[in-house]
Image (cartoon, rainbow, N blue to C red):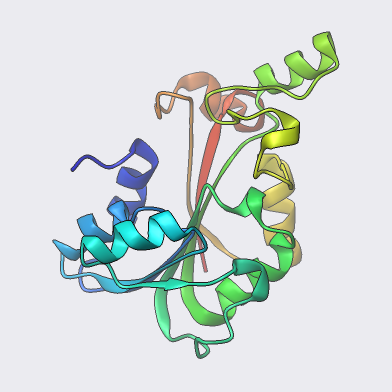
Length: 196
């Protein structure tokens, strides 16, 4: 099983034997890979198909709506809470981030950067919402309801007094390039943050 490139970065940020919670876990591929390093945890998803896939592969999964919060988990009961490629699909991202930081000692958050230059150019030239590798659905058919930029997210972290332990901003091929290092909000397509 091969992890997506963003999941490989997440995997490298999680210490062995950590207890994790993967929100919007999908088919459980990341959790399955992490089990090989004696990392334990749960996935949460709302999709019946993904729940069935997780159960079929032995991944502990809970079916729940992230917009309802994480009340089933005690404060600081999880080492690292992961929310990858899901932040933009929840109704109240700020409230979910509060819940993530209540439940987890740390968090890893990943999202597509709407400040990426091609998104800006497409909107400017065509007057339409962009469709790309990282934003693959048309505006009327997308689960993405709260698009943000790297600057937006970092401002939210500052408002919530969250410490950014690590940041990885990459292009569609999940490469870190010199232009991204110089102007991440303009050239970066995907952002990953390790927070405390």
